[in-house]
Length: 222
Image 1 (cartoon, rainbow, N blue to C red):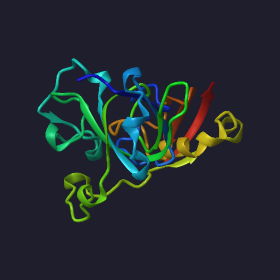
Image 2: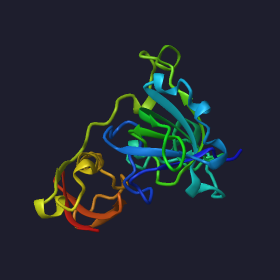
Image 3: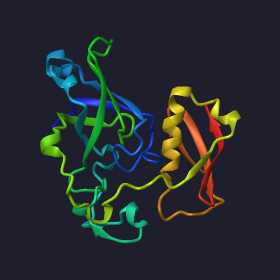
Image 4: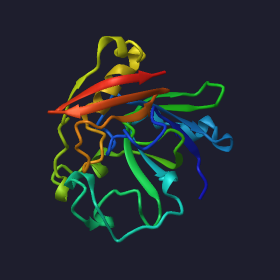
């Protein structure tokens, strides 16, 4: 298989990326097709759907070994579960599946047709192998059982960004950044209140500490 497109998001590394699609609905991303797939006819009817399935590659994990058991962040990073009972990126085949909201279809750009989506949990530049419409009557199962991840996690942290740092973040990206930080992007086994963490977000380097349930942004570098 070859990628049909690449997605462009705010994240230059996996740190900070929400652990599931849709957890931070304000995150905006664009999907740009490879030149050979920039045919508007391939998107005919797509704007009639509100959500899409993205089939993509864990590109940072290609060629890395997999294990039959992994430690899901949802269980604190200390309990092992079978890899096929998780969405770990370290799999026999590094394939990801995400459901995102389709915000709009722009057919007239210098890069051909572009899809605007929300709620993606992908790094910038991730290869997309296929795009399929989300079909509510077939894909939605309200009575489904979710195992150890039955309920969506509530945002764990309060977020404090001093005004002089917040003004460095473009206004249209502030809500998304607040949502990412509230989800607690730290590895689940790291709880050092003195440690400064950092990640790339929309061309910025965001640094923060976490103590007593509050994430405090200490620096934002442009």
